Image 1 (tube, helix red, strand yellow):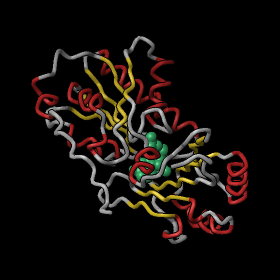
Image 2 (cartoon, rainbow, N blue to C red):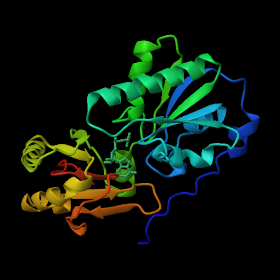
Image 3 (tube, rainbow, N blue to C red):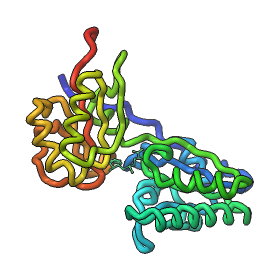
Image 4 (cartoon, protein in one colour):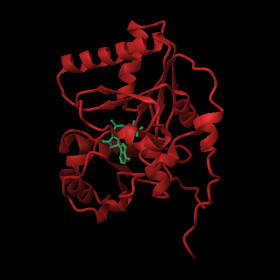
Length: 267
Ligand SMILES: C[S@@+](CC[C@H](N)C(=O)[O-])C[C@H]1O[C@@H](n2cnc3c(N)ncnc32)[C@H](O)[C@@H]1O
């Protein structure tokens, strides 16, 4: 049987979204989930919010960095829209991170107070392990008068499941989305518990941990039960059974889906 082809998506009304349909500027901050990588995976609501923005904010790890969310949404950002990179440092110390969250919230709130319609772009979904969530919490705490809303995005977990044609959860399955445990022992314990409870695991922040995760999956006889996803939605996306991915360190944008059992009633 030939592989199923996705139905051709009707073209998004880009011209309308980018121009004619824009109404008066509505000052405030909108957190926008931009999906995992493919610009086609932004929602219509996300595209409309970006089109209506006068200021496009996005997280960066360093002042000169490009920002993943901004790259994903690039086709939907016009040249006449001003940009505001917000530094969210990737460090473990609490103080610089708190300072960055409060600085980001202050910058967003002051732009909104000055009449700007601001979007803060966020890779994947805006509420799932998202830098934008810290800005949201800081805004709600310190700038309660600032109008804020959140537009959800397609999370990398859902995009990986779809690309791999891998049902995430069925019937009574539980689904646990979490960072990959920090140690082999904690990973083995999590696997055993998920196996006992019939929980499907979606493990984020796999990256360099893959070098010790893979051998433990193999020892547990679970290589064929796991789907590895890397840079899902990007042109160099890799979706592969765990068995096909060597035990090297992998990039940060990697995840693992593990299903240890299936419901009894299936087609
Ligand atoms: C800080 S979390 C962000 C999650 C994001 N907000 C979402 O909804 O998908 C980052 C982790 O998500 C996973 N991730 C995000 N985007 C990905 C992608 N395009 N492909 C594979 N994994 C991705 C990786 O495990 C990465 O380490």
